[in-house]
Length: 336
Image 1 (cartoon, one colour):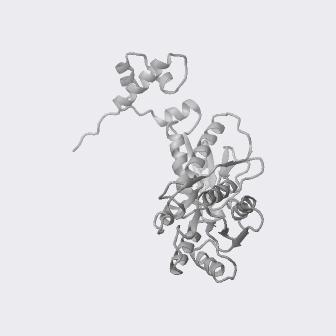
Image 2 (cartoon, helix red, strand yellow):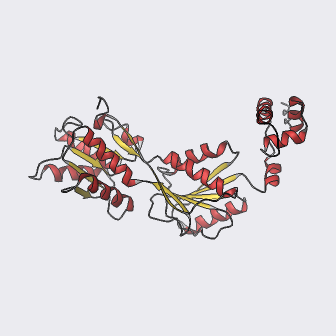
């Protein structure tokens, strides 16, 4: 039988550091007055000896659970997983854990999970979803804990974080123009999606008079169909295509290849989302707009922490900038 190793206690840390137990407690909990060098030395010693603070005692001391709930109906995890990665990275150094509850689109299941979070006395809830213009199927207004909405619609007066779709569209057009493309079209998803409308509006503003926007579904099949419509028309074909997501872009690239049109030599392609399963595996690999979901998650995590600790946070919608990931479909293999 293997004997269970004894738990390292705060008394062990105090002996190793040559200070009192109360001094160790103040150092580890960032309370009291002491030199920063002393505080950091005690924290370093605690880490070296493998001290793990008692979570229950810490919760009682600060009247907090040091947990945050993440509620989502994005069951595929396309948007939620990178967002959760950012949340976890932001909160781990603060001793806060995150647990995920997937609710699909079931109001009853959503209420069960929210009640469970409240029973666990979470310090706050981050709500996220599949699109920015739809709310989760549960009312999170008036809860006894703060709520931050990230990549989903929030209630009036709440903190809402999302990617700046218009900024992403401008980045795409700038890249296409930088590689010398002048006849650029936009092939995107349904105009019933706010994100598609915002990207299309920004595209029109960037391209100017005569801008061509083609709305369809968020699928590879629509990418194929759009190429057929463009190349079977008597009008001049485009030399640059900005696609509303990476699935559409992959369909466009495949359809062009079937017609003997070279990417990026004849036509340059830019996608949207930086969904690596599509972007990396497309041939050539896709230049695409990344919505910076991990950074969005970091911001959401730090915001919920501010609210949980009583700091003031301005309510309203905040749009975080996107970034462009350059690969071969739009000049990624040569200097521009």
